[in-house]
Length: 114
Length: 113
Image 1 (cartoon, rainbow over the protein chains, first blue to last red):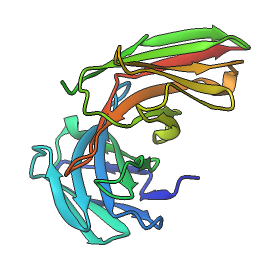
Image 2 (cartoon, each protein chain N blue to C red; image 1 turned 60 degrees about the horizontal axis):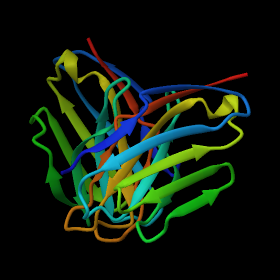
Image 3 (cartoon, each protein chain N blue to C red; image 1 turned 120 degrees about the vertical axis):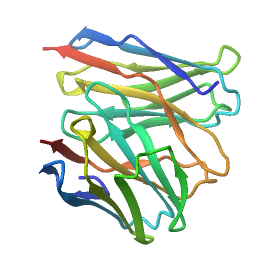
């Protein structure tokens, strides 16, 4: 079992739906990340939060909206997604942005857009 | 500058054999080199990591060899087992205002029984 918990594990939604992905960690980490992973490819960084503030947005379309309610939680709000957005969405956390420590990943949410 | 090149793309090894995956980087600012193991339907899991002031690190059957002057590092899996069959990603990261992982392209390892 990973220490980064993501829900739901699977999500199927239509292009007009609004849904949210959730991520939780209780390791006291102060940096949290969203990644998108396509089949047979490495994860691609989407967003970075540090101390609950958005630090990096990798030019992600506005139909993806991140939120960090507190130091343990990270959400990704989805709206009007496209079929090409179908992918595995991974959350990760690390101690902080300047500490030389690894990122720990959750098992992801498998998202399918109809 | 930000690329990490990984080879081979796929690797088939007999049970008990040695699996070797190689990575090369350009950016000398990288100061931490983790390897991740990913099984189908799961997220990447940290397997082993090394810092550039160390030339080798061993954890059980897994060893990282690091050549700072050549800007290369490799993962060796000794006595490979069918349960090791997974996708392996090398990565590099550096201290900075926003710490980001740069992943290699991945190696799909299959260990035959």
